[in-house]
Image (cartoon, rainbow, N blue to C red; front, side):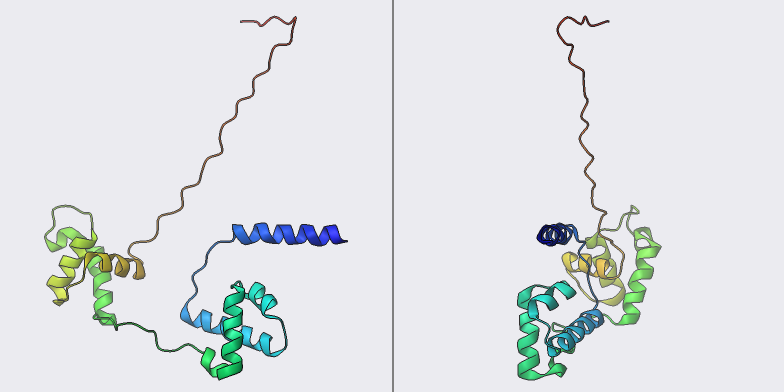
Amino acid sequence: MYIDIALAKKSAREDMYAAVTVTLSRDEMERRRLEAAEDLQKGITQARVARKFGVSRTTASRWYRTLEGQGMERLRKRKAPGRPSRMSSSQLVEVREMFAAGPRAFGFETDRWTTARLAHAIQGRFAIRYDPDHVGRLMHRLGLRPKPAPVLQAEPVCEVYATPSAGVAMQM
């Protein structure tokens, strides 16, 4: 019985390291926090809540302290911190259209968009200057520059050769 438990824990640890990182939306993160808060209110331990929702025990502990000290409402999402976007949603749609039209439509000699080129085109169209590094983040957010697929490592090729035993002649 104890061996089965140990094996189950071992496979769970292996699964933990093999898990794929998933990015949640703000709504999904809020839903997760609120569900975790309900479990914490029912008396489920912080460690179990952390495992259930795939977060660290520190995060579960922070949720618990917030729940106890400030209530469920404090676990709801708040306005995103940071500077508001300088481009409107309609301008972002136009950036997608600009990207689809290609760099030649904006006077560039080749068909390859770079962050510097798109920054230049955005400045020409909207009179908004963005650093090329920020344009890269903008492209990613708009789905114009997806992350490259991970490179899968090929298994090493192991060739097995029979070793001639003593007294057996090799044929050529």
